[in-house]
Length: 181
Image (cartoon, rainbow, N blue to C red; front, side, top):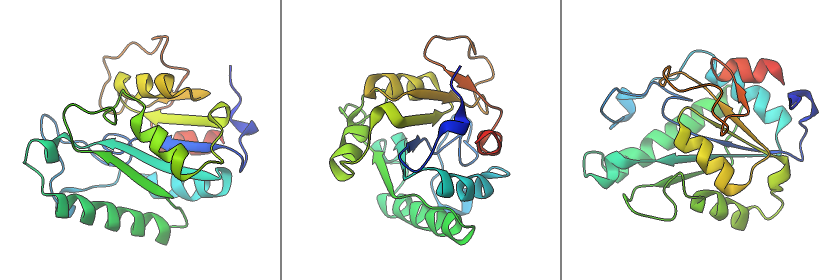
């Protein structure tokens, strides 16, 4: 089993948003900043990640934008405010990648957003990278990209088989991952 204590500033964290960082609306989307609610411990977790990881990137599918239910300006405001709150708590997100299209090489589980990150941050070493997500699609993204470790959070998908071969480690929530570092 992979020892998270071995992580240092040469490592990269890829992280999903909805259902990992914030409440995910059941059968709906987060449309505005007013609807965005951080999970407990998330800001504290990002403060730990800030000290441990050299690069932190968020990769998030935003189907609500693709369907015309969420306005792009609202998505940008959510991401701006989310990043500011994380920074104010001592954390950081170096870049947020999102895919607002239904069919795209950037849509998870395709590795496109990760490949964009590698282009923007050439120092990313996939053998020293982790993906944290709450769906098997996130885990497939990690495998397709070639990260070293996929961490699954069963926050919204309690029915997923934790022994699925796509999943390397399971933690209850983001602060539990931070405590393991």
